[in-house]
Length: 229
Ligand SMILES: C[S@@+](CC[C@H](N)C(=O)[O-])C[C@H]1O[C@@H](n2cnc3c(N)ncnc32)[C@H](O)[C@@H]1O
Image 1 (tube, helix red, strand yellow):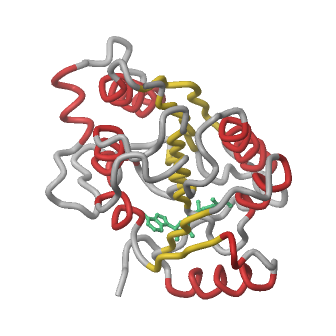
Image 2 (cartoon, rainbow, N blue to C red):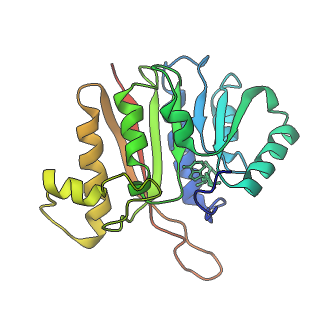
């Protein structure tokens, strides 16, 4: 039984979240990565990103959808059927990393790793995806994450070294304002992983605000990395 994160996704209807979905969708639409290969994705129950992509791009896109929360997985399956999208989706109840670690080279056209949590928990699987070229040339790996990395936090994979400690050793932050910490760590890490084969195409902070309370619903970062060779 997969037990990873509780589903803490609380900005599904946010305007800024929708703008981010559109940016990621456009990076995929503007790609010549073959549409015959699936997009590895975390749709949650509403399939908002995948519907945005089909609406703006093409009904030819197909998906391998992962979800680790049991209730959300059931709702997602019901929505796939209700939306008449069953022919476009394969699904996996479990972690996105289950699919990343067993993928072959060029297996996916794109990855939309729209995680809820801190990059600390996921950076090793993104590293694996890049090192092993599991997306095709021109394909994108998009990652959304919390704009916070707690020192010492190793995520659910306790073998991971904390990314802050690792990056402090190789790329100390010259301007260590607390609110720039995650941006610095993520940019340095991805740039190193990118080498000559990937380009960090976009990195963007965003947050939505609860219209009733005026409170921020969580500060987030989105990155789009493109495989160029
Ligand atoms: C931020 S939401 C996805 C939002 C969706 N892409 C959208 O645009 O509306 C993340 C979803 O993936 C699930 N999730 C988070 N991390 C996961 C992981 N590593 N493996 C599988 N599912 C995960 C969460 O339970 C949640 O339902």
